[in-house]
Length: 109
Image 1 (cartoon, rainbow, N blue to C red):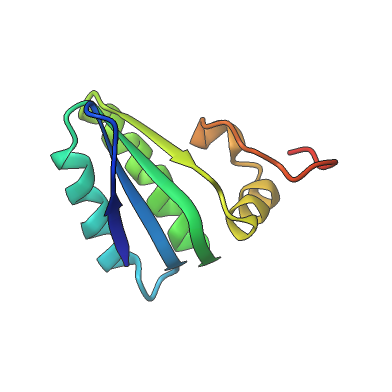
Image 2: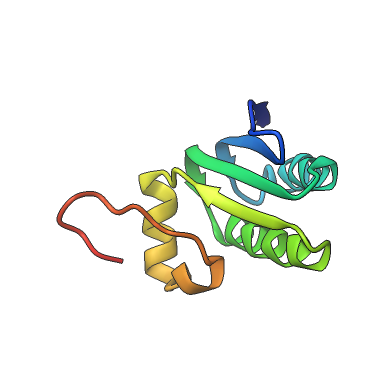
């Protein structure tokens, strides 16, 4: 489940929690699209609480980036969990997601 957090005035923020897998995709998609639609200029999605992600979750993250662009808004993924970082690295998607990735000390993307 995704929960709202306190954003700066022009940026909405939401916390993605637990799983971004095929089993939660519809619920997560609805929550994230609602947050994007309700944001005035940009949406920040905190991924620190994501402990499980599969290809459906990655597709959802990519889709939301495209949808934000279509709505002429900015979407930024922040605080990537180790699980999310691992999948992004495995699939070589750092460039497509377009956000700075903070890797643990001594590692590179």
